[in-house]
Length: 448
Image (cartoon, rainbow, N blue to C red; front, side, top):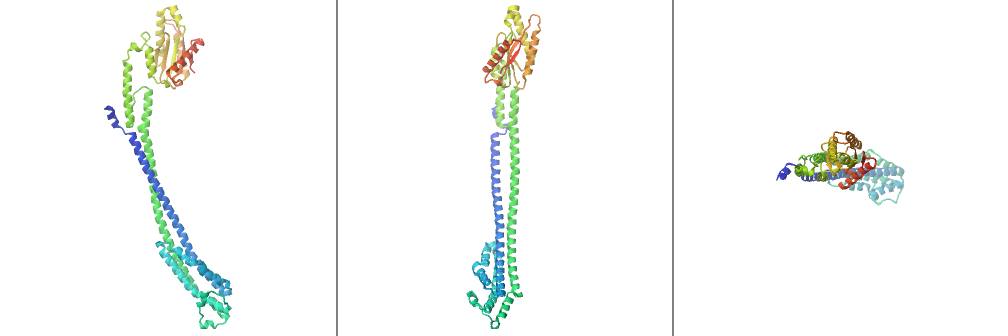
């Protein structure tokens, strides 16, 4: 019941994660949508620009064709070379550039007005052709050309013009296509063409302006989506850190220092923290209720073998140093000074160990003169610090007190992180301790 109440106080990481995923997916979908929209808008702008180029080209093609006809008819009337007449009719009835320009201009209902203006230019050009036909007919009669396009048969010279001499006919033909009236009609064609171009420019401007406005709005929307995504990522990082990572890091530190875990953070973590704290409380309670005689050596006050086994199963050995102490030549102390003096020597030895180590460390008597010390939470302690402690212990033991003989110790030292299990760790420090014995005792050896 208590766990349920605690669970309701926090935000669920599962719900939070699902909400952030949904928001991320929605924003990504919106981003993709606007990206496609921007692509389509840009495509339409490109198409509008290409269409504008083609329409302008069509309008200019009509004018170019009209100018080409003018050039050839004028050269024909001046030089009388039928090649210019042939080129003229090749353009008028084979190339059809003017008519094709009208077809290109008729794109859709948007270009109706531009096509209308261009059609008027074509009509003016067709009207101009009647003057040009008449001029060419004068040249044909003046030069006596018999092989000419049939369409010129429909052109009849006035009696006055027919009675003119060949030279006069040539002069009249030239004057017909080079006089003021002729160029006024050419100017009218250009004016109609320009009006068509103006319509095309207006249409393109309106189209591009509309598409640019859309593109501007779409870019603004993309910026907003990017900003929202950045904010959502920052929110996700902040919430994950606050609700998950920070509580976990705090919990690790508290576990290492053998303390309860604060029940903060996400719903799921609070549940785990509460469960851990209940087990921690039970563990501490069970430790405090252990029978002192069952877990401690009655004579020295150190943990006994049972206490040692309990500690070995509950201590985090990954950041713990484990040391095996053996009193050198303890049997000879008993034989020389008696068992009572030997007992006093062991009592004094444990007191020296307690003075040398911290209150959080554990001292265990696992045999007659063998002792194990657990230096917990010592992952960052250097070898030289441990060596200094052991040298200090040996120095104190060399000083005798009333009723206690001089003593020395041999020590084997190992780290829990260097062994796969407690049994392997003990084997390492036991071998290290015997190495100390081999090297003259009164020393220490770090297990390799």
